[in-house]
Image 1 (spheres, rainbow, N blue to C red):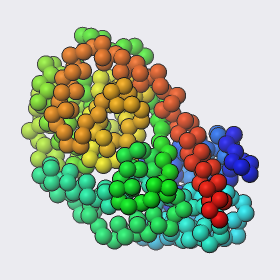
Image 2 (spheres, rainbow, N blue to C red):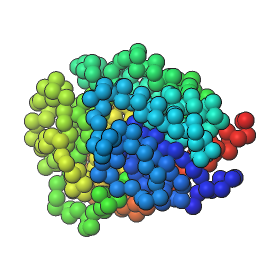
Image 3 (tube, rainbow, N blue to C red):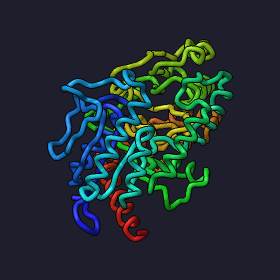
Image 4 (cartoon, rainbow, N blue to C red):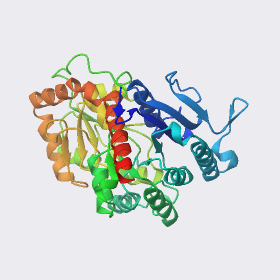
Amino acid sequence: MIRHMLGVLRVLYSFPHPIDRPGIAHTALQQVRGLAAQGVEVTLFCTSVGSAVLPPSVKIHQTMVVGGRRIPHRAVGVQRAYDFHDRRVSNWISSHADHVDVVHTWPRGCLATLASCSRLGVPGLRESPNPHTASVQRQSAIAAKNAGIALPRDHSHAQDGVVLARERSEYEAAWRILVPSEYAYGQFIAEGTAPARVLRHRYGCDLRRFPARTVPRPDTQPFTAVFLGRGDPTKGLHIALSAWQKATIDGGVLTVAGSIQPDYRQSLASRLEAPGVRSLGFVENPSSLLREADVLLLPTWTEGSALVVFEAQASGCIPLVSVASGALGQPGLDYLQHDVGDVATLTAQIVRLANSREMLAALSARGTERRPELSWAAAASVLAECYAQAVDEFRVAR
């Protein structure tokens, strides 16, 4: 049970989306479950719970459910839905400030809540699942230029002054900003955020969904790599394909799994159709792909902390990732790392591992041995410690 100087921690957790979805909703759900298991008293506000199963100790408020039916965000306008959720949470905290020690909010639905926290003397935290938005937009533009295409205007990382201004307002309104990796932390500091305002926690892996490889891969099987994620320039698929092509692994197989941006796919057509490359599109359950692969290729340009890296490690698949991936552990021991856009280093790493079954076995075993450290339970413990730190520092500052 996590305690701070005044006892059991009580957190209001505000997530302005349904919590039974993939992506960030999966992260939020795992955080809430993990916190409850740590003994943190959680009051959850989300737009709907849907099919998600939550611990009985969690007090649930659904902000966009009427008569047992969920109201889709698009029915009222997406940002209006976020704002409505935000006002509901803000109103609740205004009359229940003595019921919580800390408030954990998420982007786009938090300004009113954070303002109430400041007014009422409650530390308000803002989750940042990505690095600083200025960095994300800048790096995404560089990635697209490197790939020779443009990001769609509606891409979540496209240049947008309105989005950036809102994000900056949310950063400023929060007592502390929660970031999930050392890379994300560094990007906030580089954008001028005071180090004391940034709390580094971490994400995790659902170990039930991603079991470990039960037997070592036979030496007779071909060297296999997998790229798993959204197919757009920011994830660096063109870098992965270039490195794989240059590595010329005899009999090797590169599996590309994930939906690919249409114009990006067109620019990569010859490489996606090359011998030894198979493109699967979106896959429902990537667990088997990771267990069957020797290495994961993720030469991403910008990332808060890619969950697929933890999922690969837990599965026995070795991550070959850029410095922006948000990987957990020590480079060279828990994963192999290259600079963003560095095709030559990634190529050399592929060749090195393809020619060393001993190194493959050692790095793979390292990941599966560390499975408990990669879990969402371990991540929740770190997050709860961040809460306790924020609460104690807030009381001292007051």
